[in-house]
Structures are given as C-alpha cells and as structure tokens.
Image 1 (tube, helix red, strand yellow):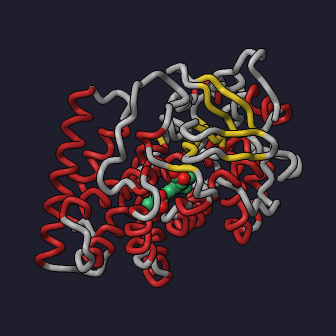
Image 2 (cartoon, rainbow, N blue to C red; image 1 turned 180 degrees about the vertical axis):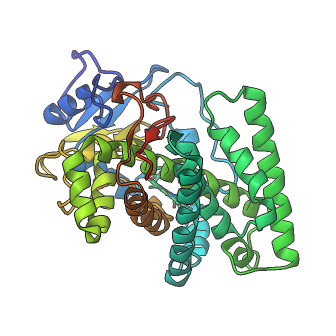
Length: 400
Ligand code: HEM
C-alpha cells in the first residue's frame, strides 16, 4: 500500500478549460493519468478519495461494500455540513434492501410496451414544438422552446398527469429550472408541485388510468411514498434529458462534420446518442461511502471514507475509448457510464434514449440551417450545477 502522508492532497478540480465547453476540468484528466484512484481533501476537511479511471469508477459503482446513502457522504464541491438522508422516494440515496423494494416495483413499470407507446408520443410532442418554433420564427432559446418542454411532457405522459393540469405543471418545473427565479419562487413552486403530486396520487387511487402512477397504486407504497417517487422521477428525468438535448445540439452545431454525418444517415441516431452521452456526460459526478475497509488496486479505502466518482473523466479514459476527447458519432460507445452503473443504473434510460433518438433528427431535419445565434463563448454554461449543460441556447435559422 502506498503512503501519501507527506504528499499535499488535491481538492476536487472544478474549472473547465476556457473555450472548451464540452471538456471536463483538465486536472481531472491529469489525475486519471497519474493516479486513477487518489486521495482527496474535501471542503469540510474529510480526507477521502477521488476516482477518475473508467475501470475503477465502474468497479465502485458495482460494489455493494459502498453505500449510496447521502447521510454517510461528504460533499466534494462545498462545505455544506452533514448531508440529510434522501427524501422519501429518492432511490439514488438508498441501499438494499430499501432500494430493492422500490426498484423492483418501478422496473416492472418501465415496460417495453409502455416505452413503445411513449415513442409515438415523443414524435407527436417534438413535432408540435417544432411547429411552434417555426411559427415563432428565429431567434429562439432552444432550452425554453424545445429541450425542456419535450422531456417535461414525457414525464407527464409517464406519470399520467391529465392534459388540463399540464400547463400548471410545466410552469412550476420551469420556475425550478430558471436561474433567475428567486428563492421564494423556487420554494413556492416546490411546495405547489408536492401538493399537486399528492392530489394526483389521490386521483389515481380513486380512478386509475393507464400510467405508471396508477399502476403503482396497487403496490404497498403509501401515498407519501408514491408522491415522493413521482417527484423523484420528475427531477431525475427532466434536468438530465433537457441538458442532453440542449448541450447535445450545441455539441453537434460545434462539430459540423459530425452533424453532416448524422444528417446523411438517420440510421446513425442510436449510435450518435450513446456517443453524445459518453462525450458530454452531463451527470458528471457520483459519490459513494465505504461501509467496510475495501482494498482496490493496491489502495485501502477505509470504512466511512467517501469516494467521489468523476464519471465524465472515466468516460474520457483512453484505456477504454480510443481518441476519447473526440466526438465521433460512428464509434460504438458501449460501456460508457453516462447512465451510471450497478444497482442504481438509470431506470429511465430507455425513455431518455427514445426522446433523444427522436428529438435530435427531428430538430435538424426541420431546420436544416439551424445555427447558434450568439458566439459559442457567450452560451451560458452550467459550470456550477450537478447536471452540466447550458442555461440557454440561442439558435437561429433561415426562413424559407
Ligand atoms: C439523458 C438523460 C438522463 C441521464 C443522463 C440520466 C442519468 C442517470 C444516472 C447517472 C443515474 C445514476 C445515479 C446514481 O448512481 O446515483 C440515474 C439514475 C436514475 N434515473 Fe436517470 N438519467 C436520465 C434520464 C432519466 C429519465 C428520463 C428518467 C425517468 C423518467 C430517469 C430516472 C432515473 C431513476 C429513477 C434513477 C434512480 C435509479 C436507482 O437509484 O435505482 N432518468 N440517471
């Protein structure tokens, strides 16, 4: 075992290279080359670990000796004191067997049949929003006009939010996502959404329809747990897909040869989505806490120590992907960790894939001259957010 007592410990690198909106902080890549699992000093003083290599990040994701419970972890980005346990229904902060109970119930609800039906709805919803963009005319913020409403409405489909309630639902989710919302606005929107989800659960119990929430009312989940799961699905599927659509569009517009390849061969969409997931890794960082002493690749992680997982750096590991810093839609990016790995691997990944496979080609087909409406360096990046991407993406096009 190596002794690092005399070496100064790094903190979590957070600064992305200027002018490279798609690249992780350069120090993370340096650490990965030198030490794919290294000691790290956390802002609250904890001395834990940072994993940057693909194989070690994957191994820790899959290892039941590591916990996902928030209250056992130290936060890598700021000193926020002790973390509270996961709110009711938040699967990512639970361990087995609590997690298994929820996961089993939910897995059965993300059925192939339901995903197939949702594909038809994604096609319809994307077409409606592209029509609206066309009517509005250039220039638009793609996040507002397309990247957020499409996934938001798909979550409504999944949960069975009635049409009459969708506008209110979208208004609250937009307030939560809007950077210029005040703290009071955010709090009010969160409370309203929670209340709405409780009402929705009651309505589904009284009169079940063909959707995930209605299906779950026949399980042993309490009303509070059901509303919690509903809120969690909303959070898990919205910011993530929104930013993949918006940041993915930014990446494609910035790589015209790749965009041309996708336009020339729509059959490339499935592969393109996996490569964009790898290259962008918007869910950039994960975390685990060791439940017991664990020896990994000659290092000893002690019980109680936090390991931060740099998923974005793992997805750029040259030992796993050839020429990893290049966006190459023709590569097979199998094995990327953009949806996580192990028991918490993204439950909504098939839905997210359907949304992206439909929404990217539909956008570029409808607007063949789509381009940024501002210089790339003026696109506001979500550098300080747990989900990376763009706050806004002003785009324009030539009208016929
Ligand atoms: C491109 C979009 C998406 C990305 C990048 C993404 C990414 C992730 C990642 C990295 C995890 C693992 C978290 C961890 O290990 O702690 C995860 C978990 C999860 N995701 Fe997604 N996700 C996306 C879309 C969705 C959608 C559309 C839904 C549902 C509507 C969804 C529902 C979930 C749920 C329920 C979990 C927790 C699973 C568990 O803990 O067992 N996600 N997602």
